[in-house]
Image 1 (cartoon, rainbow, N blue to C red):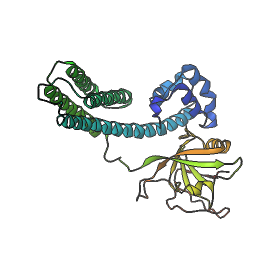
Image 2 (cartoon, helix red, strand yellow):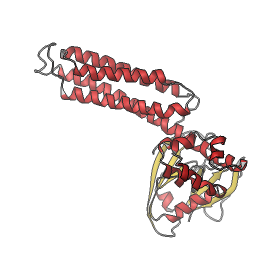
Image 3 (cartoon, helix red, strand yellow):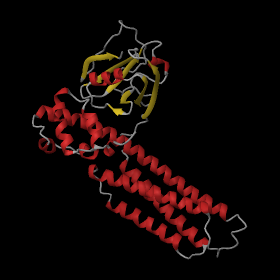
Image 4 (cartoon, rainbow, N blue to C red):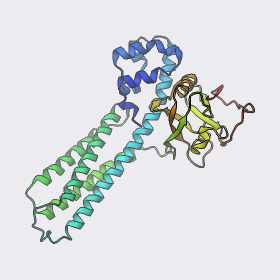
Length: 330
C-alpha cells in the first residue's frame, strides 16, 4: 500500500468523497489548492480556515479523519523503514559474499589485482540504492516528526560519496573491497540506529496489512460481511455469514479492520459510503485488511470471537464511542 504522504491531489479528493456528508462542500477548495497527501497529514486549524472550512464542527470531523490517516501512515512508514533495513542488510551480505567468492577464483591472483567482480559492483549499486531510499524516507518523515534527522542524512550522504569515490579510485582490489565493506558496515549501523530511534517499543504490534480477494462477485450478490464503524471512521469486521463469498475466502475474521476497497482507502469514511463502494463493485473485490495481533483480545475494538451470524438472529452489543449501526453488505 502506498504511504498516505505520497498521495497525489487526486487521491486526496477521492478519499474526501467518502467522508461525512457535511464535508463534501469543501472538496472544490481542496481541488483548487491541489492539496496532496503530505499537506493533508500536516493539516492544522489555520490551514482549514484558509481552505474555507470555518465551522468548528466541520474542522473537528476533518481533523479526526486526518488523525486516522496519520496513524495509518505512521505504520506504513515504519513498515517501509524495516523493509529498507532488510534491503541494506541484504546488500551488505551480498557484498561480503561477492568478496569471499572473488577471492576464491583463479583470477584473483594476488592482493594487487585492480579488477572488481561484476557481482561486487552490482552489490555496491544495490547498497547505494537502499541508502537513497533511506534518505527519501527521512525527507518525508522530517516535516511530521519531532526528531531532527539532519545529521543522519549528512552521514548517509557522506558514506555514499565514499562508496562512489572508492570504486572509481585506482586501488588494489583488496584495498577497495576492504574499504567498501567498512563503509557498508557503517551504513548499516546508521540504518539500524534510525530504526531504533523511530520505533516505540510500547506501540509495537504484530498487526499487519493483508490483501484478501473475493472473486466472482455477481451484481447484487450478498458478500456476507458484518461491519461496524467507530464514531471517527474505523471499519471493523464483526463476522461473516455461512457459505458467503466472504466466508469462503477463510481469511476474513472478526476484529479485522477494512483499510481499502479495491485500492481506495476508506479509513475515516462514513459507513454508508463504504457500503456503497462495496455494492458498486462487481466481478472481484480486493479488501486490504489490518489484521489483529494473534493471541490478543484487548487491542481490537471489535467483537473478538470469530462468530458466524445468521440473520435475523444477529445480536449487537454496544460499546463506548461506537455507533449503534452495523451493516450487512449486500
